[in-house]
Image (cartoon, rainbow, N blue to C red; front, side):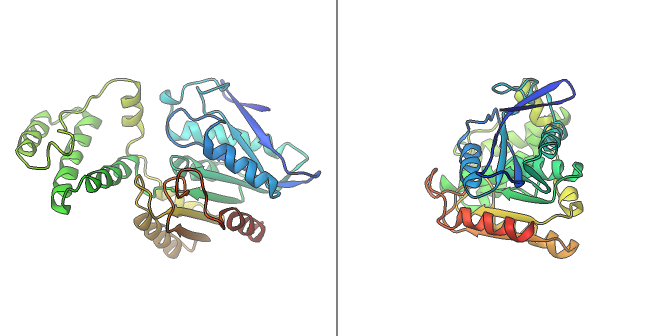
Amino acid sequence: AITWKNGDVSLAGTLYLPDGNGPHPAFISLHGSGPDGRSAFTYARYARELSKRGIAVLIYDKRGVGESTGDWMQSDYRDLAMDAVKGIEALVARHDIDKQSIGVIGASEGGWTGPLAASISQHVSMMILISAPPVSPFEQGLWEYGFALKSKGLSEADIEEAIALERVRGAYQKTGQDEAVLDTAIEAASARPWYEAAGSPGRPGRSGERVEWYIRNMDYDPRPVLEHINIPTLLLYGAKDDLVDAAESARIMREIAQEKGKDFTIHVYPEGQHNLTSNGIAFPDDHWSRIVDWVQLKR
């Protein structure tokens, strides 16, 4: 067990160490959305598999979850990134960790907070991003909504109309303004054949902890941080991800790498879902060796 503090928030984690005295390369793993703790499948699996292969991994309870204090719903992405930055400092202080080979693993929401942590810390030399959206949470939510509507059999034209309504709803949710514009849009949409299949979207709520958290973070744009950061980055996507548009994300990341001269290695697993497995638990055969080989190459 390992603990550290970020201001008045206390974070509790577990450091998985490889056999031997080290010093070992190490990664800190950042959370996906919601109340994620150390026991979540992805963190625990990565920590076990990578530590068996010579890479230390620090996983921890998100603030307000498990043994960590604070409240993630009262936070923004910078707060969550700073929790990781302080965890990285705890790694740097250890004699069994290679201070020149410390990295960040960010999966899903960690695709926003991971690069932010890496850009703040002076100690991060590499980064692994899993199913990382290169767009804002709001835009990523529209992708997710579009996937869901497509699976219900709606046409591209109907999906475009539904997403256009979501943009009007999102603008209202953020500001509370232009109620008449929203009500007119909802009324027009309610007559469309797709409206019921799309969940009969009405006026969105603007109160409640989760909604307020979302409003605070919905327009976070990860692109400036991705364009600024200058460390080797491995980006992994699953072609069958129904939350994040893998093909479009990979295209945008390649565009950033080309325009800004970044050391990005991008791979899309043909059968991968959001957590890169094909069935929720089975990772591609070459997954762990792909990560370990890349780490050895970039150390």
